[in-house]
Image (cartoon, rainbow, N blue to C red):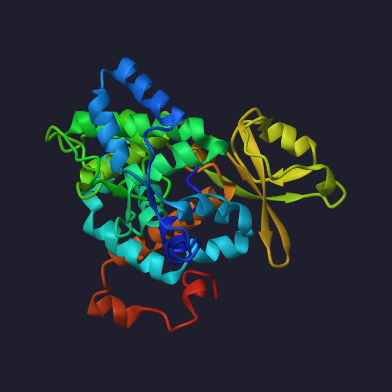
Length: 358
């Protein structure tokens, strides 16, 4: 997301509980910064000051959230450790079941956005384990804690707190009941409030958007987010690459920007097997493997995934999980062989020789 969520709920849920012994405390609405926020939202959004004071007074500042924000897995872990968290047999198996159960919603969202259903499913799998783990913090607590207790990003989270209050007002939600991640992300796709208001889609056309349990809305909203952030239908996402040994030290594979092209990377010693034009924007990725760096080249679609979460590790996990889910679903869709076909099938180990000359 444009909102950098420090790490996925599943990975840190247990750790967050024990991060701080400092108890939660009610937000002090007499603070100057809180009073300024109330005045701003009142004037800008015609929000009742009394209502704002009442809501913010009910918010609980959570010290553990501040500590969790400073421990993002995208910064703390190398690629091979990060991959193991999100691309594993259980997540692939349950993602396959999810895809089969929600095939219609995924297919419709894919047609609408141009994003392959495997990527939609993979994002939901990484974000919330296919909607099962959407967060246990009250969103107002999370956002108020960060808006008034996390100076490094206070301005950002005050904006998100404002957007959350507007979202709940417009959608008729109880702002004291909505739950999400410790960074304030909501629903199966973990949209921050500003993204919820801007990119969420009422795909079911029932008059409201539900990103917790309406899978038509959920899938379409993820697809719309990627489309609006530059996803190009039918184009590749990520390719393996190789780098000349004498050029590796001069290359930057840690910066997320589409400032290179396929041609410029090739001129710097990068080899990539791609049919795309040489002027295609690209980003070089250095993925840490146990045996050393594995180089990859990402394109506009890869970059679009990093707009969901500003991390190459996250985007690579989405790509690998998507490929695994697609392969597993295709295997599931293959009809069983008939008795006659089974009788004529080659012995095990001979498949590669079928049709080959004697």
